[in-house]
View 1 (cartoon, rainbow, N blue to C red):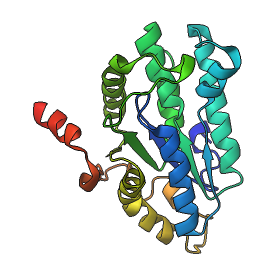
View 2 (cartoon, rainbow, N blue to C red):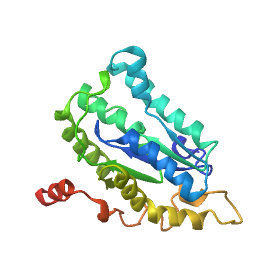
View 3 (cartoon, rainbow, N blue to C red):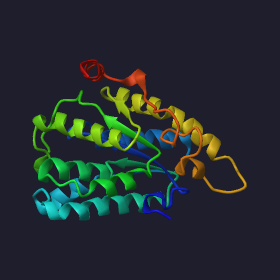
Length: 237
């Protein structure tokens, strides 16, 4: 079985990606709490390995260290998936690949990152509508947010990875994330019903009919929570 599909019958994964200082960690923690309260499922959120790595080493990683960070992030997600029904991912391998390309001009991790990221049932892209805040070694500055955002969109678009942009401040950002996930969560309820084969969320994890991102299914998005900056970006394109 491909690595990206291992354990997918054990957990529904929600990936949160985005440029630096766009509230990924805050959203991941709050979203996991909301999902646990409202869905009555075992929910975990997996922190970003890069943040811990930078705090531990006191520096940012070099080019040859990127692959190990990518692998460590995915292993954390795998471990959480074995013990929970829903896993909220504070970044995935996709972010490591994007930064490897932008910082080091190295695109060698992209194919592997895309394959691993496909294990996510939904992808939320955090909007650039929050003010940039310094955070030690990990953040470079507000000037890098637009290039990272664009690189993420291009990579996901090139590989057919559907995503919803989530904006807003405070609890409204969590509300908007829940609204974006609503179609997927409804589908998960159907998939979780007893069937002759497969366990909880099995059909979602393997791209069943009607699931966002499944082959031949229309791309999904949450238009109700798209921030004004996002609408302006679309008009410009």
